[in-house]
Length: 212
Image (cartoon, rainbow, N blue to C red; front, side):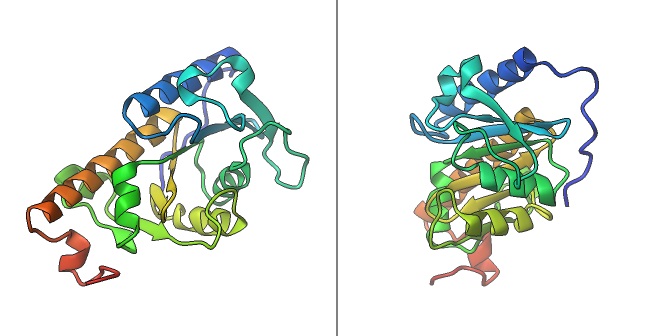
């Protein structure tokens, strides 16, 4: 279960938020966790949400690429906010998270086609993640179904994978959510490598694989 989401100390300014977005956006792209115009980031501060604009490049973010919009989903959203805003808002409503990172980690997405959950085989993944739920939806982009299922899963887990699409990580900060995302992708790569040399994933050994 998520814990330790303390309130952010001190005064928050738009330039400091943009700087945080830029650092994490560059890292996501450099680590191969995104395609060119994919993925989105958000933080919540004082009843508002700062989120990347739709179609922005996360490795080249400017101040105009980070928009402010109400935390209350009943209020009008910023017209340029990411199309995944409803999922971010649902996660903030369901959890104490201060930040959300949506990425497209290729190895984790590959496993999502054959697993209902990702059970890390490596020690770091097992400690940090324990189990990563895989959720399925008829529509995976800008989907109310994904918003509902992802926010529910993140009450008890640090990251969730939307089958065939990508991950949503909740954290104390963007850096924290990025760290969880990289841990997931490393664990997924290790699982695929083990499978390639004839081993079985942890979920398969425990009888939880979707397919034989």
